[in-house]
Length: 415
Image (tube, rainbow, N blue to C red):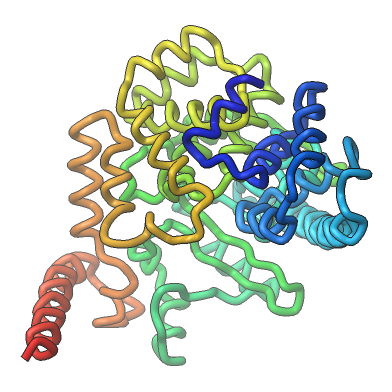
C-alpha cells in the first residue's frame, strides 16, 4: 500500500485520483478499504469529476464494484444509483459482445480459418476473472495474413461492412478499397474495422497483434503455437499465453503513450491472476524482440500506481534502466490531464523512440514511419489492383507537396 500511496508526488494529490487508483483493482485488501473510507469521509469528493475520469480511463466497472461492495454508505445515494445504472449498461454490452465473439469464433472454425481473439472478453476472463469488471466496447480478432481475404469475405457475408478510417472516399473509391486484395498493405494499424449496424457491433480484424511500422516483431508462428485457452460464456476459445498477453499489452500501451489507466490495470490484473507467470521466458522474449524497455515501463507503472508486486530480480533490472523512470514520470504527469499533449507536435513519436532500448529498433521505426505508404497515399491513385512499389514513390511526393503547400499558406498569411 505504501507504493500505491507514494504515487501522489507524480500524479497529483487530488482525492478523486487517489480514490480512482484505489478502486482500480479486483482485490481490495483491508488497508485499501480503510484508506478509501477515510478519503470519502474526510474530503468533499467531486463525484462528477471522479465519474468522468473513470469513464475516460475505462475503469467504471471497477469503481462501482469496489465502492458498492466495500463502503456504499459513504457514497451519495444518487451517485451510487448512477454508477449502478452505468454498470448495468456496461454489463449488458459486455455479455452481448461476448456472445457475438463466441459466435464468430465458431463461424471461423467451421470455415477452417484459424482465429485468435485478444483483448476484450478474453482479457477480461483471463486477467480479471470476470467479464463484467473490464470495460470493452468492441472486439478484436487476429487471423494470419494468408487468411485476410477469406476472413474479410466471411465478415461481409454476416452483415458486417468495412469501415474505412482516416480518409474520405467516394462510393467508387470505397468499392475499390473493399475489392482490393492488397489494400491491407496500406492500413497502418494492421486491422480492418468491420461494423454491423443492425447489431451495433464493431469488430477489428487484425493480421498483426502490433502494426509493422512500430517495429515490435511479436507476430510469429510461435505466437500461434503458444496459446492458453479461456472460457467465454461456457465456450472454450483460444487466447494468447500470459507472457505474450503481457508483451502485447505493454506494446499497445506504449504505442498509445499509456494515456488510459485501463491499460495499466490490464498489466496489474494479468500479473495478479497468473502467479505462475514465467518471468524468465517473458524477459527473454522482451529482450529478443527489442521490447524490454516497453515491458519495464508497463511493469513500473503497475507497481507504482496500483501497488503490483514484482519479483525482486525483475524490479532490480527495471531500476537499472534510468530511462524507464523518466518515461514513467512523463506518463504520470499526463495521465489525469484533460489535454491531449501526447498527440501534438510529434510528442508521440518522441515517446515511441525513447521507449526503445536498441538503436536498430529506433532506426527501423523511423524509416518505416517515413516510407511505408498509408491509405492517404493510396487515395492519390485508388486502384483495386496495383503495383505496391508505385505507392512507395508516391508517398514522398505527397509529403513534399504537403510541406510546400503548408509553407505557402504560412508565407501568404504573414504577408
